[in-house]
Length: 303
Image (cartoon, rainbow, N blue to C red):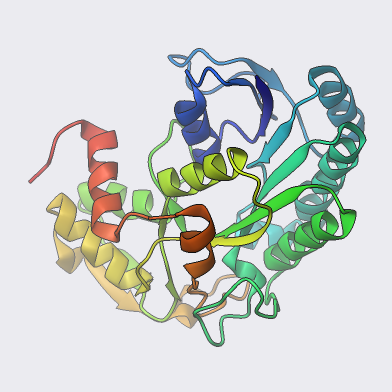
């Protein structure tokens, strides 16, 4: 039986990993996050509190549990907050990764780590794994630094870059799709940019890709995203169609209109051919992903 440690279990991805791994008899899974307890009280999982930015705590826990695989879904992902609170962003996205790498090397564990499309400058799109990274904001810089810590360490690893992850979780921060749906459900007018292009990724696809890597001998860098390239505005329109909401509530704007603190890359779309070939990765379409969200929210079709 393989031992698996999950970091960041209370986030959207961490909760989905708990759902997928629960009941898998070939794994002994320990879930962790910086919160005192697991957010989903209905799901009986082994859980303990862990702040990966605390070296002593990481060293103590991993030395005692001795996992074969560490899944790192823990990160500071609020792009504008990372720009403002740079010390905390570095502590979480780089120093925390250094701590995991250190103990994985000591006990010969494999680290499967989640990174981001924001390591790219967004000038071209259709990025493959070997394309040059050039982040335009501090969040992207910390995530790239975290990648480099892992790659240069020599440990057994896989890094999964992903884009605009969406889905349903308990007490999770608003991902873009959830923000759109919640506002339209309340009849609130929203503004969505039509000049930021990406491949929205359902959290289930990302979690399954991590599980596939756990069960195989593959390592290295993988781009994991949805198969469709779309703007934030068009994604919101698609969500309104699926859920039967009023599309006239969605206003089309440009990125400068948002006056965000951190610069955004414009086109970070991915080439996912490597994941399709090596991981047999078959992501949901946007329509399929939104219908899954609909089921997760209500258990029934709304229209």
